[in-house]
Every structure is written in C-alpha cells, then in structure tokens.
Length: 157
Image 1 (cartoon, rainbow, N blue to C red):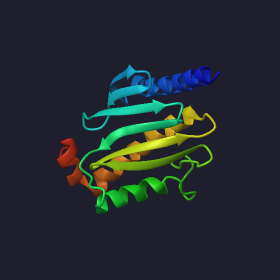
Image 2 (cartoon, rainbow, N blue to C red):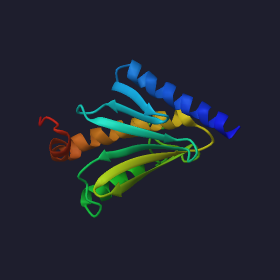
Image 3 (cartoon, rainbow, N blue to C red):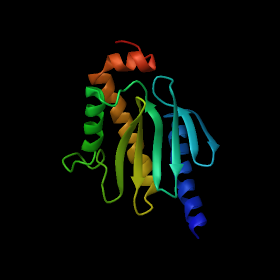
Image 4 (cartoon, one colour):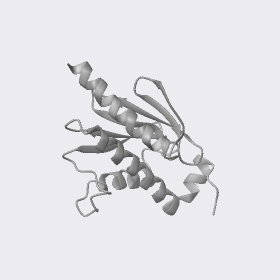
C-alpha cells in the first residue's frame, strides 16, 4: 500500500516535470534512477531534483554553489525563501504551509533547496518549487548579477 502510494506520487512528479520539459522550460530532461531527475534550466547549468516520497520531499541538490554559510548572501537567500510563505504574496507566488513547506540548507558553501510536500500534494509541490527556483534566479539576476557571472558563467548585461 505504501509502495503503491509512493509510486503514484513519483508518477505525479514525473508527469509534472515532463510537462515543463515538453513546454521547453527544461532541456535535456532525464531520470537517472527512480526519483533522481536531471535537466538544464538556467544558464545552461545542469540541475538535479531528488524526489523522496518516503520523506515527502522534493530537493534541488546543490543548486547554488559558492555561497558561504556565514555570508550576507546566504542570510538573504534564507529570508527570500522563507518569505515565499508570506500571506501578503499573491496566491500564485505563495507557498501555502498547509500544502507544502520550503527550506534551504548549506553544506560546504553549496545551497540546496527542499520542499516538504504535505497531504500528498505532489503536483502542487512541483509547481511551487519550480516557481520558487525561477523567482530565486530572477532575484539573483537583479540583486546579485556578479554572483551569477562568477558561479554560472552568466553573461553580464
């Protein structure tokens, strides 16, 4: 029963991600092994999304390199991510804590972002984490273009 639910949840994630790939949002979309997805999204940078249905977690592993844990940039990123739960945000930009909760982690200067899916809301979770990552890169482009140039070979405008 648990395996069946887990399999259904993973299929929901797989189909949701495939829809983004089909629309051309992601390039080179593939699944390495069960629940480990790879694709290219921003700045031709490979990304890895790990789905763990036993923990109800979607995690962008090592999404942002070169962010020291005790840096103003990491403090700002944590605040930006936490702000996604703010009720003042329009619904399409907000992450509803009753359905999902987002957090970020820093290991050795590599920032990972995870979303805890509640009540089996995996389609909602995929939509929210994809929107969050998009907003995060837009924010970085506006507020920290130098970071993107250094770490993602982004073009300076």
